[in-house]
Length: 78
Ligand SMILES: [Zn+2]
Ligand SMILES: [Zn+2]
Image 1: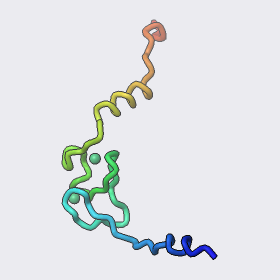
Image 2: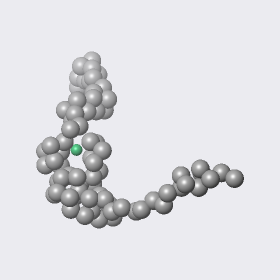
Image 3: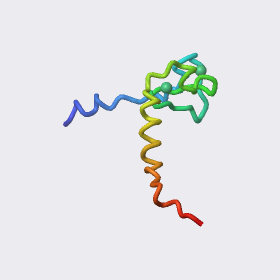
């Protein structure tokens, strides 16, 4: 007897994703970006869609994680 539950189940329309920049219909595999938008192949680069994601910061953090400081002591002399 839960009428409310029934009304909540609204049929989800499978909307085809469109490029957030040029509104072009995207294929099966849209390019997603860190800024939570989807783009076509032309607009996927951050500089092509005025990306709002802080790439510089992310890049710096990534570098620091992947490249722990190389200690000069470890360089062996032959
Ligand atoms: Zn586009
Ligand atoms: Zn972006």
